[in-house]
Length: 309
Image (spheres, helix red, strand yellow):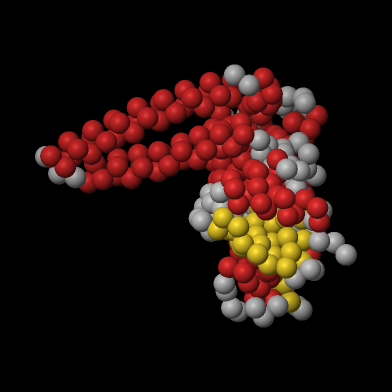
């Protein structure tokens, strides 16, 4: 029988459950504890080791277990919780959560994918910081606009200037990182060859979807959270929705779709054809974003730039 290992992560501790041996134990969430964990897991050769994404507390464990050659999977906590509800597990403690993760791995058999390397993690962190700065800048600009002339408005203007300076510095760092790495530079040039795809979208894809080029069209749409799913029961047919996937990728693609729908000759024709058939603008834009990520996946797979024909 296949062995699965569930790990519930907290800041100081890792609760571990080995299935089907029904063995539970805990180690500290630090280098010493992870050395002990690797030593205990390596001999039993688990087929999957699962941890939930937990605000960064899982990063050290993921990195060290992956470096040891163990098949680590970072799970969406919502999926595990839904599984718990499906099997009637209401109680929630750290050991129980570790067991649930191990059972979920056995039942769902999620695919083990290659994890981002240190460079990809660094680029992802830089892009995340860029989004944070943009959010703060937007908020401070709105406050400055509403503030009356005086000390508060002067303070807000100073903060806006500081954030703009930080954003420019960060953009330079991101540019140096991407353009200084030959593989990323080539990928960015391929992605940016598509009208509507700018540096931010290209670099978001480099950071958040490093596997781009290895998916099927359906897989890449699902990973980007752009694959529609329909609610249906008997003769009743509900509306189709999108969701899940990688939210930052979906947001970047939607912004790119807004541009591509007006400036990319192929996607512009596609967008207008959808509108002509009566599709709402939002639905048509989502379809453009879905078509765009499928095109980008094919471009990276084939290593050929955009060819409108």
